[in-house]
Length: 289
Image 1 (tube, rainbow, N blue to C red):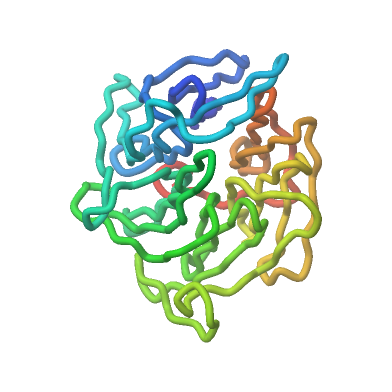
Image 2 (image 1 turned 180 degrees about the horizontal axis):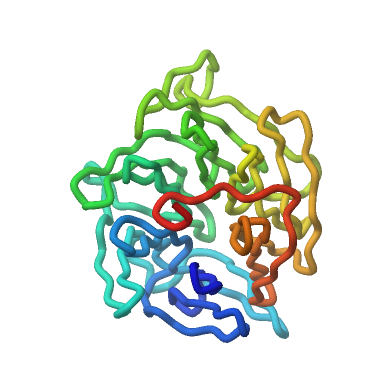
């Protein structure tokens, strides 16, 4: 944010919060459910993907999500006024289908936003995931990609001609070419409705979480188990990893002077860290522009 603070979500606390430069945490709004991702939208409002709530297992000093909350009803998209903490539900369904577990979102220059719905996990089954496009005024929501294997992070290339989506359990990064805001071009692949192309995937036991894109188009993905931010070249030819002191690195964004500072959330211990990124981050619509 312009004042040097970082706005983030606390899923277990069910809150949207602000971390000031002195490290203090201030709750902006208690939203209920499971606030999972946040982005600045038109009019200075903050848009939140709410997964509806998670159940957690606690170990000394650590929290682990283990499935759908007992009081879960549905997922939703919420809009928060950061000055007052007042909020409203913008969407909780699409074409008669309830949103299951909205996860992450990104705004385009046209004022609409893309978001992932990772779904929910229960003891013996789980939902299939999807990607949606919606207008920020609540007038339109459309499912654009289905199915995906628990889609999580989502971002746009600097020219906004490519949409990136990562899947958590497969640790695959997919790209989808866009013909217009909210419109995906068909591709020649036999899968994903002949729409997407795999940029890269990680080997071994690693999982992808949320992502950001930097000014040179690199896809920067919070990576679980490894405890790192994976730096994926736009053509998928190379992946570097920046290891952090927590196996549950769940999100990354850019700020500071010239957007050269990467901020990452470390969810197992509940901390926010910062470090220098080798390139400037990509300026976000409605925030850095």
